[in-house]
Image (tube, rainbow, N blue to C red; front, side):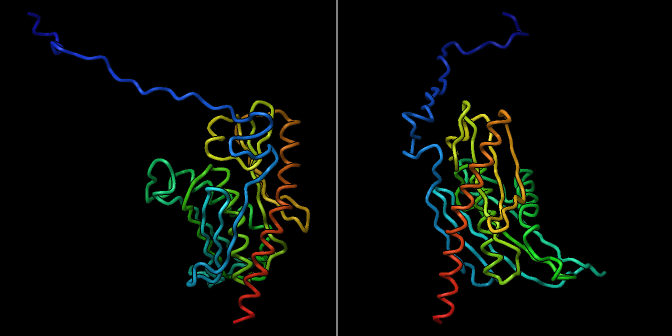
Length: 259
């Protein structure tokens, strides 16, 4: 008997491996799994005034993506010293139950990155020069995650509407749209299942009235011509989304006027 060798059990069984699920093709007969076309975006529901304690708030649903945004301010900066322009602070957070895997209560690197992207996308539209020595705080909470690019674009849309609901002066509304790259084709407003099988993604923030892009971020790989086409399609999608944002704001104003 070899005392230096660890003897295995006399009776053993084969390990049970998890069966690999066959990936369903994203596109079949020019249709996606949810019967949308390649250029179609999901229906959107947008409502203001959800958080009564905040100066402005918005709730958005884009398919299975659900997010709520609250805006506080403008309020005086706590730190001493004079600031000619106001400060825009954004905090992006996934709820612990929003994703397939449980998220931590502390913000992870992805949430910190999305918070910085929100600031970069919204700052060009907000008249911070009219708010010296003041700060505006934006809090976005994702209630259900159906794709990271979809959550980011929904957060930008909800934040812009919440800023308007708070009565903060802006140059224009900021809308956003996302696109996925898959085998040389562009899928607009992709879901989480589609994201797992694609080569990359693109999220574009846009001011429709001024015809200006405030922010664009791309991940993965794609050809230059495909990226240019995706930018054009995202701009068209942003123009469609802006009408939904305007309708939601008009409905909130009508409700206040009726009261």
